[in-house]
Structures are given as C-alpha cells and as structure tokens.
Image 1 (cartoon, helix red, strand yellow):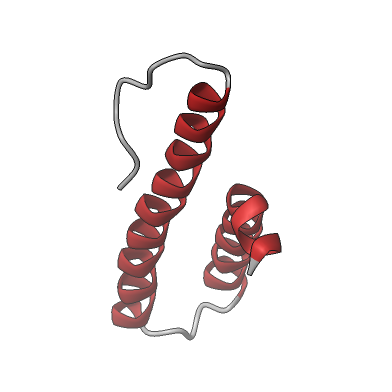
Image 2 (cartoon, rainbow, N blue to C red):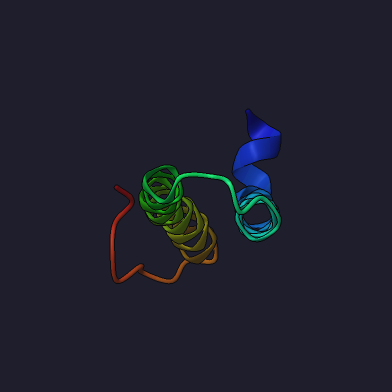
Length: 72
C-alpha cells in the first residue's frame, strides 16, 4: 500500500491513459459503460489529489512551515 500512496499520481495517469485507449480502439463498448468509467475516474482523481495534498502538508510541517490546510 505504501507503493500506491507514494506513486498515486503516476498510477492514476497510466490507468486513465489505458482506459482512453481502450475506449478509442474498442468501438463496440456501450457508451453507458464508458460514461460510468469516466465518472469513476473523476472520483479517483479526487482521491489522488487528496493523497498528494497530504504529502505536501507533511513536507511543510516537517520543514517547520505552518500548512495552510490540514490533512483530511
């Protein structure tokens, strides 16, 4: 789980790229399925953003700089 937390943005970017390629090269996929996956990708992007924000807050606090926002 540490690997996922450390590299959440990279994993997210690869997953989104693969999903876009599949949606492009498999035209027989139903559009409802593609829209559902797109909604899930947006929700996952929000989670990745929160992980990255948490790492930034940790880095600021360890440097002795008060963070503007607290960790969720």
